[in-house]
Length: 441
Image (tube, rainbow, N blue to C red; front, top):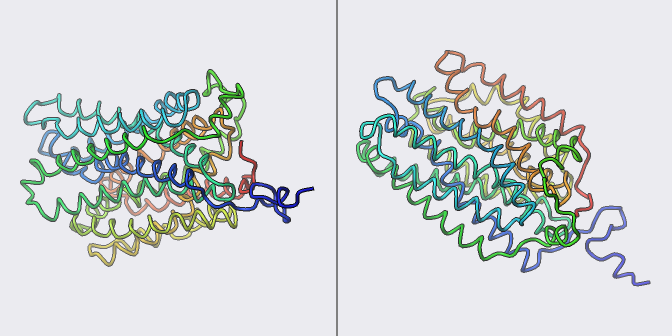
């Protein structure tokens, strides 16, 4: 008997848990390529919410700023309607043809739509055609984003060493937050360096052009990377499904519902705290947008740095306790955090920071916990589609709902919405099986 072989990495250790392995050079390269490619794709997606007020002025009739902003946020929400469609189509494409091809297609679509938004004339120039073109571009971006999460999450987790799956999966959210951070930085720089006239006439468009150029970098990186061994084994063994969407619903209904429950609180709090809080704080407290964006940028730096460490914690103690800490934290703290918002940097910064630190428990786990629910032949679809459905309902509508509540005089009730969503997901986290040591095929 070869004792070394029996206790090698990837075999159950004495306590029954798999022994963690170090990432090899190929795995590190895959994680870097997947992360950078995903980062630059999410720059374009995040720029829309950051420049929402300016886009409202440019693409909709002037005269009623609140109506224009709500119209802009409705377009933002409609983009999320396409995410389940993109998840079904592009997730199935990645399950049939490979993670690499799926990720290459999504970044090309996102970059192209970003360029389209940058060059679309304003409402004053071409009338109603302007918001229609904006709508089409956001639909394409929503379609791309719907497939991106499943493909990139499957790619990163499948590229991981055993016992390091949450760490590898956390880089999916590092890349998302990194894209939001770059977009936030672009917003901070343009709003600080340019006059209001320059910002409205051309400054915001430059940010979208820059985001589109970064998308081309992501395209190049994804073309150069190899596909995962997990997909190759599934393909070579004949397990590939001709209809992964049907297989997901028929063969894995409990896992599909579980992914929806896992996502509800995470997507709602993420889109409020990480994406929209600067605009919301500007609306509700009057804090200057550039001050709110500075707070967001600093909090995102902390968030991005902390994410891989939260992933390592999940690999050590498990998915359930780290995710339960996130949801339970918002159940308890949603009311005091939202009621502490004020019109100064130091009243916004701690609210954003505490919220983002809580979200670490979700963001470091979401890719890995969803990937661990499904086998390789339906993994990209299984991650993408139920996640996209939950995001469309709870994440895409979050900016609209929060703005509507403010305009209707009910902003003081926003904490109830956040707490209720968090409570639903907390129940899911506490009752789901622990998958930290699950065999991964």
